[in-house]
Amino acid sequence: MLSVAVLGPVEVRRDGALLPLPSGKTTEVLVRLAVDAGAPVRADRLIEDLWADGAARTGRNTLQSKVSQLRRALGVPGVITSGTGGYILDVEPGRVDALRVATLATTARDLRHGGDLAGAAELSEQALALFRGDVLVDAGDGPWLQPHRARLEEVRLGLIEDHLMARVELGAGGDVIGQLEALVRLHPLREGLWHALITALYRSGRQADALAA
Image 1: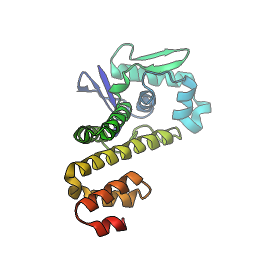
Image 2 (image 1 turned 180 degrees about the vertical axis):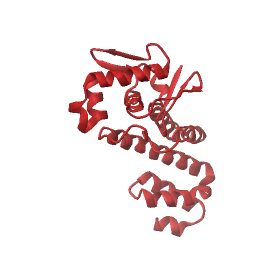
Image 3 (image 1 turned 120 degrees about the vertical axis):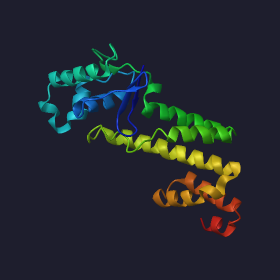
Image 4 (image 1 turned 30 degrees about the horizontal axis):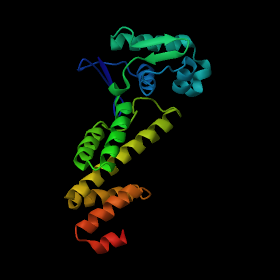
């Protein structure tokens, strides 16, 4: 069974064992397919996204060569299929960290709003641990990455909000005030972070600071 991690340097594991991967465009093809795991990505779209300014000079034979290299590296027959709809990375979305983390974030938020604060804190912490550095760092620098990186950054910040707010509500507000103060400086428009900070300050007996915030 394959798992693909792209929330940091790319890592692919087969039955728990880390696989060596070719660098460059071959790995970029993997990342591009992984963010849409289970769904077809047209060959023309892959070429346009990954070769960008050079797309007009890049033939399908080049893409096919990179896909063949990737198939050999993954070593699982049928894990990358092709047809009229395009190429498909046939991996369950839950085995791709960039897709799994979005599901975990939704569940953590539902737990917090449903009153299961301990569950929300634990699950959001697990989800945040999936972020191992810059997201999609091995995917090149094409324009296609911008919306994916923005979406994943939004997921990450939402998890941070839910995790810290759950801890505040559980009575650990005094332990996270410094972290929250740093975060609101970095993200001054995040209302959830301000809410958590104000609540933490107030419940720590710092009413004047809470009012100022």
